[in-house]
Length: 231
Image 1 (cartoon, rainbow, N blue to C red):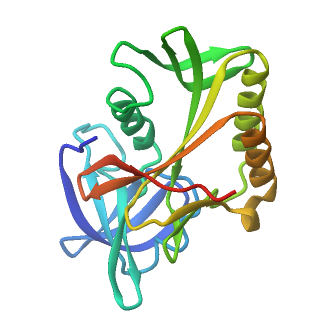
Image 2 (cartoon, one colour):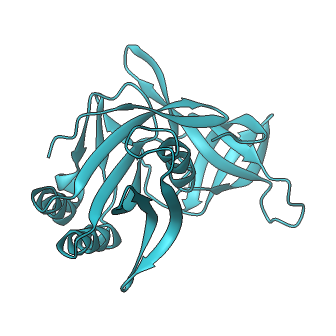
């Protein structure tokens, strides 16, 4: 997944979860934040951020904040993509080329099943799979964690995937870790233990859990390698 035009800025503040104040070429601009999560450990005053330029002249904001450099003691900054919309696009690119499914697999997005709508539905060699994507932006000393804020919606998604397995479908959760240099992924029980408990339940019920890291540049993100999941 690649952005058309990206520029560098300096983060100042985030008045609310939708907008931020950023210095661009010495001028303060109001930009849209493409992630409604907290991102407190990332969006700190004067950190380096990257912004995608909009080509829509009617927009209220001309830029989208899509990535940030996380400063680390004794280590170079870690570039993390913050765009909550890009994991699904990146996942689709990966699903169409990875070894999980054959080249003849039918892959569809946003498919309704019962009262649910899943990110992906895949038919391959008679197997039917529902797959949910979760973008991961939180990291602590090489350990990626999800979620970074309580997510009852996320719990609901997992419960619905468990129901799929009980009805004869395959089910999968794909954690797209929006950075490199990650050793493992863990559920963030400190932030939302119910999510972690439901994820562990799903694993026991046969829901496949996959975590993949990404090669991230200021203007692109591509899924790279599988990362161990520690439940």
